[in-house]
Length: 315
Image (cartoon, rainbow, N blue to C red):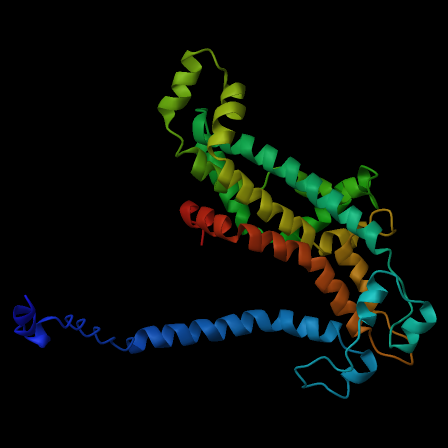
């Protein structure tokens, strides 16, 4: 046995070396150019938010001496303290503020109530209209739907004066209901958006439910809405963000703190005294705080929103 083991060739017991790894090809120039363009667009998109944060963390007096610095000038949290009312008037003026204070939490509650009311009503009425345009057969349906689509091309500013006169006649000036009223009902975008999804619900499922005795209203609430929960959630998020960011209409009809929303209240930071300029640090801090909930909401549902919009064919 010993002589046989020593007779074996030692190279036969050596494990085989692994095959050489395939040589990676360099990415094509087109892909490199696409990635470079995407990075540039990303920087252009995010730079305003970075500059807003940089200004919010700066001191007003140091901003004018460090206009091109990418880092906060004399970094402090004075802007955020003025937004939340944590700073005395004398200290705010000393740090370059106008001395004007805002009731942030009151304006935040007004904004939440306004955006929530608009979203609930607008999505509900738009879903019902979209169901009527997608499932019910009535004379002139396509013509009326075409009118809705044409109204998408009407600039919003053309409707401001008629809406203002209507709200004034109803006695709703300087009220949250007056701010919500023009946007509470259906919008052409929401109707078109939801109609595209309602038409994709199998008709056989709806007919089976109606054979079992379900009416149109029951089919709508127990079948259509649950089967299109994703698109309904998407249009709800888009409506909420739009209502939250609305500025021109609340500015026209809101005059007191009872109905003032955050976007209008931010104007207090643009006031200036003869000795100082605008409170840029306070204004950027307030803008960041007001925009933060919508940024988080969009980031949380970005994939669902993009998927639904892509499916509907809206560009």
